[in-house]
Length: 111
View: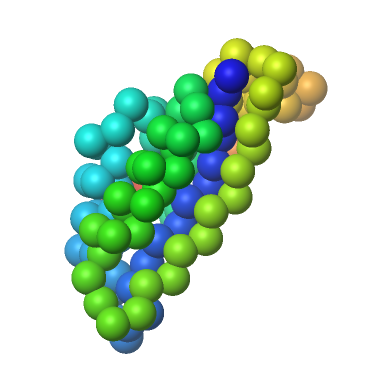
C-alpha cells in the first residue's frame, strides 16, 4: 500500500512562520516516511495510514503557539504499491515535458 498526503501545519501568527514550519518538517524525520516540502505544504509518502497519521500528528504538535492550523489531505492507494512519483511521471509523459514552467529544477529559493 502507498499512502500519500499533503500536510500543511502553521501557527496562526503575524509575521514569519518559517521557524515554526521548520519544526513541523523536522518532526517528520522521526518517522519512516518520505517527504518533500513546497510553498503550499509538505507532500508525505508512507507505507501505512498509521505511520502517516503518526507523522502528521508529530508535525502538528511540534509547532508552538496559542493556535495552530493543520490541513491534511490523504490519498490512500489501497490496491497499489506505486510510489507517488509515478503520478507526476504519468502527467509528464502526457505533457511530453517536465510538469513545471521555465524548465527549472522546480526547487524553491529557500526564502
